[in-house]
Image (cartoon, rainbow, N blue to C red; front, side, top):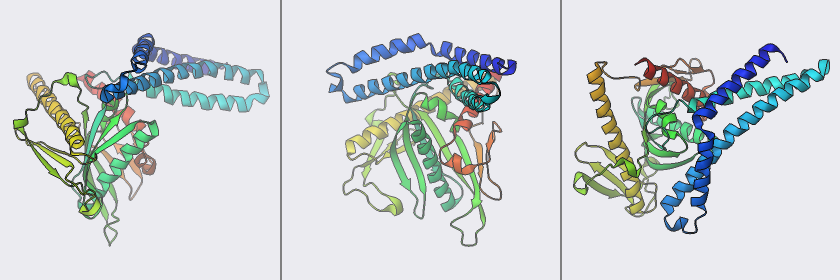
Length: 371
């Protein structure tokens, strides 16, 4: 085998070995055994919420283990591919090309899973609650917010992650004012939290009859899903609950009953709403989960601000304008923090954002290490 190829394969093997060590495969297998026993209990579905959590965790852990084991098997097979190509001599060009292609794929796949080991924050393992809001730019900004919503939902769909849209507030002419949804996936919060900030779009406006270029903005907020252990208590006297009819595009009513729920937290002024579920009770429960997540994040930010004040660094501002999507006069999507860029905005807007996520996670780790 070519010495350079052999050295490259060894480097891949060492990287994967570090991932295996950090993941602790034996511990993952033990967790799977425990979850399988819980899932096999005949009374599992007596508590549907707990049952769903068990089956979801089991699926995630099995997927995580399977992915790492398959990478190790592919890496072992790669050496065999190169050996077969060498044995074929001059006739082994096709086999060598196949091996080179697989080696490139393994570089990308192992780098992707290595990023997961960088997610070690208190809430990184949790599901994510994402809110997208249109900002400056009028109808173009509302349309842009809807494009971002589709981008994230397509990303989740590509990975087989389940999503649940809690609330969508439609704009009058086109697009959305805001939308809130949950991503149920391993490390969803840790992964998507690097998307928080302002996303900027430059394009020829489809809503301008003179075909002028328009710059519009949309904001993305990412919160960890609140669990029972977080102890976010919200007394009834601290909130106001309003009910209303769900509305669709153009303000049209999509429900004949007042099932949608809006909750206002009186002390902070935080307002959340949910209109996705059929019943008022379900919508209230979902809205309370979002409110709890926002209050938990507010508490974390206050604690972080206190620490920053003690350190005297004034805090971090990386979460403001963070990515630019240019569709005219040239085609490019560029992250303003990491300098990572792609020349195919269509693929990015169709959910191919893993490169940006990985670059963002690596960048955040270097920032954290530096501070």
